[in-house]
Image 1 (cartoon, rainbow, N blue to C red):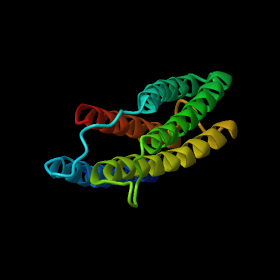
Image 2: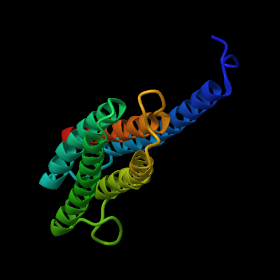
Image 3: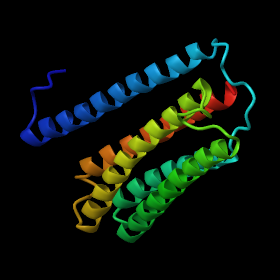
Image 4: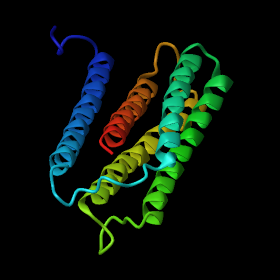
Amino acid sequence: MDYTQGGERLKEERAKKQMLWFGIISLCMTFAGLTSAYIVSMERRDWLETYDFPQALIISTVLIVISSVTMHLAKNAIINNKKSLGTALLLITFLLGLGFVASQFAGFASFQEQGFYFTGASSNITTTFLFLIIAVHIAHVVAGFIALLVVIINHLRGKYSAESHLGLSLGVTFWHFLDILWVFLFVLLFVTK
């Protein structure tokens, strides 16, 4: 396929999709490095094997999966010209995302209640990795919030339709990526506990 063919709009859409996928691939590489280091570090003698896995992280996983569903439904509603339903679902997605982040911080608090910290005398390699992996994902969820806010604003301005919804599609793709990434991280952290 010749990617130089097509009108300017088609070329611009392809370029934006390609840039999103370059970003997603680079994020995958970042998390592949972090999780590989986590797995390799499990062989250390000072690796902590006894801690209570925070229930808040289970709750956050449920919230982000539901938010991915509401984001998908919002896209379908907007494309099918159901503006008010699309708006409601986007706002629900945003609230579920806030709930996700709040429960992630509750997970941090749970570690601290057990006496484990990111750094300092009460830290160890295990909890430092847990804090780091979770915090880096939260940082990317903040980027997802920015994308979601742009999608909400553009939707309220009437910029999306069945024929023209590239920004919406890109936002949905990134949000789904954040969901899939967290589910992967959660399973890894839960199974290796």
